[in-house]
Length: 157
Length: 157
Image (cartoon, rainbow over all chains, first blue to last red; front, side):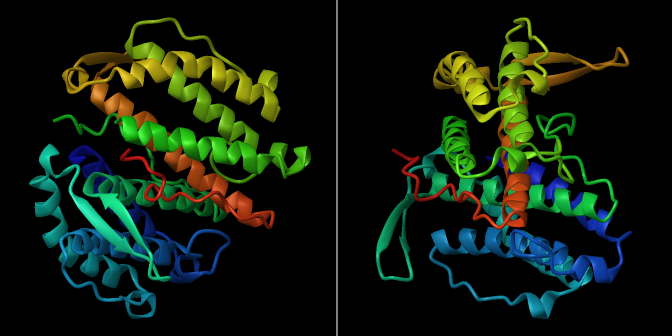
């Protein structure tokens, strides 16, 4: 679990660095697929990761709006502040939390029984999926996307 | 580990079903990003998963070429035959294999020390990343992509 989060954080950081060489217009441009833009995707990844970690712990979420965080700098600041909560949670993760139950309430009032293990893997897959979308858009604007390789990052310590 | 592979296999199956409603021309069309096309991506996912599982076990790989598998039916057959090897390997996975070492030989002759745990997570992330690319292309042709949600699939049993 920890290795996957560490991977996502490394890749995310590389995308932030990548964004520095792209014009604000391209970063904000509305695109086909996903949540529809490069910065918007990074914001969405940061928001969803934190929100799920809060939710399973029964802590209140607040609904961040992209409009208030529509610059690279503001997203990085938000990420940094959220990471202060997310990192200790992930670092203290152990197998005993795997099967804890989280009851998810859907909009129609129905409930879904999830395990914490499922939720954390959902968060991991969520980011990788959206980063795949970034990689297509990067090519569309003539750039070279950040490597998605998980190997050769020294993640096994 | 098993949950993530199961997730990928479910999502992949749903993409195969999705492809049935798309013309062969669209499925084969060369696109921007990734390996450059919908069927080519599915072939690449199947190939890479099997190849890594073979490689860490010291079993010979063969270099499949997309040209020989450029139809949905042929890719599904290839996937089915590879799955017969991959599924038992994943189902028998346990934590004791996590830190086994695989020496990866790069083209320049240098070697990289990987753990089996890293390799398996690389395979998982590899597929999710490429599926993110499929989701953009699906929207480009006016389709609705397969859901990337890991929750609500009954993966915790």
